[in-house]
Amino acid sequence: DTGVSQDPRHKITKRGQNVTFRCDPISEHNRLYWYRQTLGQGPEFLTYFQNEAQLEKSRLLSDRFSAERPKGSFSTLEIQRTEQGDSAMYLCASSARPTGFWYNEQFFGPGTRLTVL
Amino acid sequence: AQRVTQPEKLLSVFKGAPVELKCNYSYSGSPELFWYVQYSRQRLQLLLRHISRESIKGFTADLNKGETSFHLKKPFAQEEDSAMYYCALREVGEIQGAQKLVFGQGTRLTINP
Image 1 (cartoon, each protein chain N blue to C red):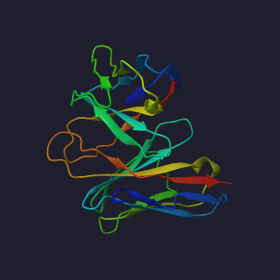
Image 2 (cartoon, rainbow over the protein chains, first blue to last red):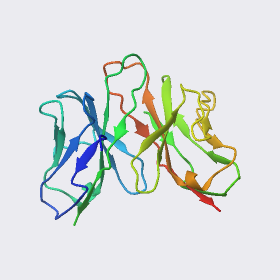
Image 3 (cartoon, helix red, strand yellow):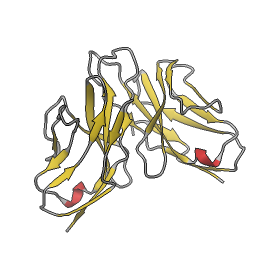
């Protein structure tokens, strides 16, 4: 499968624990996005990388959240001191560098479902 | 602020009947609109975008700037159309900036046999 992959697919943790998710984008896609999707809602933008640079962060991304993309390839999203409100599906997407004005399709991964007990 | 509204959380129609999934947006600039679809146990994937003006799997969507709407339509629904549909927008004009998407809540479409 050459699509976006995410690991783990499911994570159950206790409140207060730290968790880390990984996203492997499509090869040579230099743009990588993280979204969060809670039950009954559409995905909400969290953060965006262009190569290794984190260029934008949503206000949804509290200080407990940190994302990295150290070599411009895979990315990690860490949540410290998890809270029950962090329970959600965390989606990663990647896209190629746009050649012009228009949108380059974002390809989504299967997501990591986090449950905080 | 950018916002996408899908007023129907659930929509159920019979096979062969017309389908219309509603989407309204609020955005001060010139947005680019999309429909994404998620079939059962599959990933979110792009269905169509307004600039393409094409029909995908029999679906079309017209951007109406006056009514700030981007409704998705299909004249004759098929059972395989059953899925979750999300309307989304992004700001046009950011070549180097984030191409982040703003999604609606989604509409679950069920096609009854």
